[in-house]
Length: 256
Ligand code: 6PG
Image 1 (cartoon, rainbow, N blue to C red):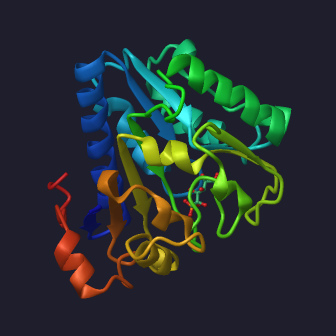
Image 2 (image 1 turned 90 degrees about the horizontal axis):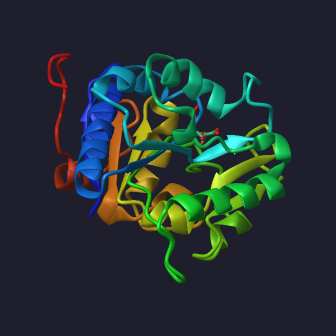
C-alpha cells in the first residue's frame, strides 16, 4: 500500500520530500555503493531541489537522471535540466559524469533511444526485468500524468525492455518530449509523488484509487510509492484513504 504524507503547506511538503529523497539516497549508497536518482520538471519540485543540495554531506556516488525532458535545448527555459541545474546542481559539487541529461535536442525518438542505452549501461539491467533506479521524484499533472506519460497514451503500454519513450503529441506543451517508461518507473525502489495546490486534488485522489490508464499516477507501484502533498492537494482524498495511509503529518516548520 502506498504511503501518504499530508503537510500543512507546500513548503513543508517540499521539506518532507527532500528528507525522504536524502534518506533513500543514503540508504542506497550504503547498500550498493551507488544511488541512482531521477528528477522531474515542472513548477512543483524546484523548492525541493534547492533544499536537497545541502541535504547530503557529499554527492559522491549519486548518479542523477531525469524522469522526463522536453525536446528543447538544455539552456531553454522549458528545459527540466535547466531547472535542476539552477536549483540543485549549482550548489552541489556533483561531478558532470554523474549527471545524465536527456538530450532533448535530438528529438523524441533518438533522444529516447540514447537515454535508454545510457540507462542500460549504468544500471544493472537483466534480460527480462527493467533495471531499478533507487529514487524517482515525480510531480503529477491535474490530469494525473506523471513524467511525460499522459492519460490513455500508447506510451503507457511500453514493454519492460523499453526504458525510455519518445513522445510527439504531449497535451502539455511542448509536444515533443522524452520520458522514462512506466515499467522503469514501476521498478524503482522508491517513488515519491509530490503535489501541492487545489488543482492537483483530483489527480492525487486518483493516484491512490484503482489503477487505470486514464490516470497514469494510479499505475505506479503502490508498494514503493510515497505521496507527499499539502492540504489543498489532499482535499479530494476520502477520509478512509487518509486514515489508512497517512504517515508523518509535518504541520510545523520544525517537523521536517
Ligand atoms: C514535465 C514534468 C511533469 C510535471 C507535471 C506537474 O516535464 O512537465 O515532468 O510531469 O511533473 O506536469 O507539473 P507542475 O509541477 O508544474 O504542476
